[in-house]
Amino acid sequence: MANSLSQLELLENKINGLIEQFDKINAENTALRNQVNQMLSEKEQLVNKNESARKQIDLMIHRLRSM
Image (cartoon, rainbow, N blue to C red; front, top):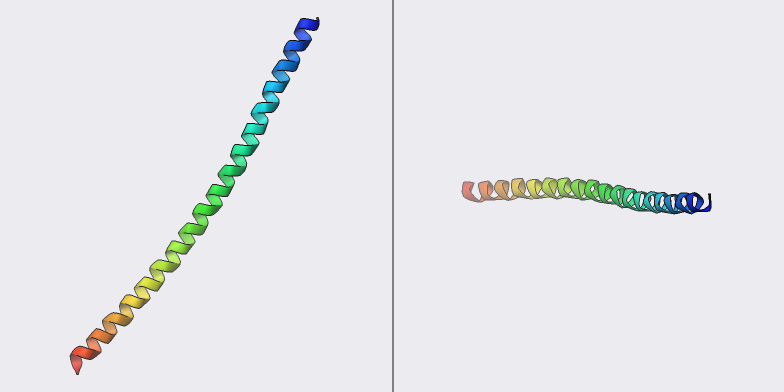
């Protein structure tokens, strides 16, 4: 009986360790997904700024050529 009890305790410890690993990896995964979403948003803002700047430059070039 004592042997099976120690095996159960060992199994419980292993399961608890796996649960801790899962929680840690799950939290890291959530943080990485948030970081990806933030970077995608930042990329979209930069693309929009770049497009706006390109349009302004094209407009200035057009005005200069009409002079």
